[in-house]
Structures are given as structure tokens and as C-alpha cells.
Length: 199
Image (cartoon, rainbow, N blue to C red; front, side, top):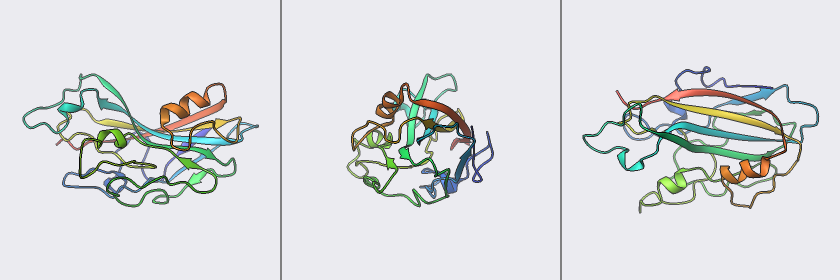
């Protein structure tokens, strides 16, 4: 099974068009184009995720004046996108089809027929902000701390499952999707791009 994007090259920088954060203000926050192929026989649905594996574990350092976050600082995951119940005949997502701009306080449930989009981690990240707090469903792109010396990697992962519907609540997180997927993954493919705001 393979996945690729026409929006960025494997392991190369993600254009600001697909990022939430920019050097000054916000980026375009469009979801990138993604396509996958060669799923195994018996695939009944897909799950798609985008995860930054280089998020600093001490959130209080992000953007802190006079502080640079060292490359060696402990890192954790930050979820930017989780989609479940993608039909087996859907193997491409067009650029800008799930997110096309910044939506203050989040885009809302993004629930329609077929695929369901869960909460991303900006829900928790912005929870302390009167201006930005809300439920952030669907895709919201890269916004690494501008004072972080590490270049962040954003992994787009697609999983082929042997079930057509994942047993998660109507409002769900990537962690709940991972738990529900256990024992049902037939194959996985991933690609990644990078992004940084530090000069």
C-alpha cells in the first residue's frame, strides 16, 4: 500500500498554503491533496490521520519571549487531522476539499454522509484562549512554535481496515480511533512533509 501527495514532496517542506501558521499571521490552512493505492483485498474502509511527531512536551515554552526550544527538548504527538469510515472506493482527497482557510473556534463537526472527521489537538491547545477556544474538527495545518529550533515532521498515515464503520463516538479523537482500530488494520502507508517557522 502506498500514499503520496501532489501538494508536497516526501520529506520536503509543506507550502504555507497548507499550514495554519505563517511567519506573519496565518497560512492558507488548506488540506493537501492525498492519494493512496494498492490496498489489500478485504479492505472495507480507511482511516486517515495527520500527526506532528515533534511537538514540544512543555507547551508553556511555545512562543515564550527570550526562549528558544532546543532540538533535544522532549517531544510528543500533536494530531492535526483524523478521518474514519472513508469508503473503500475513495482513494483520493483533493487539496482544499476538507479545509480551505482558517476558521476561528474550529470548523464544527464536519459530519456528512460516509467519512467522519474527529477532533484535532487544537481543541485542547486553544482551550485557554477566549478568542480561539472551540471544537476543532477536521484538518487544521502545521503551526509549530516560532521559537522552536527543531524542524517539525507531519506524517500523513492511511490505514486499510477490515470493518466498514469504526466503533467510535460521534465526537471522537485520534486516540479513540487508534483504540477502535486495534485488530482491524490490514495495511498502513505513510508520507511526511516538514514545516518550521524559526528563522
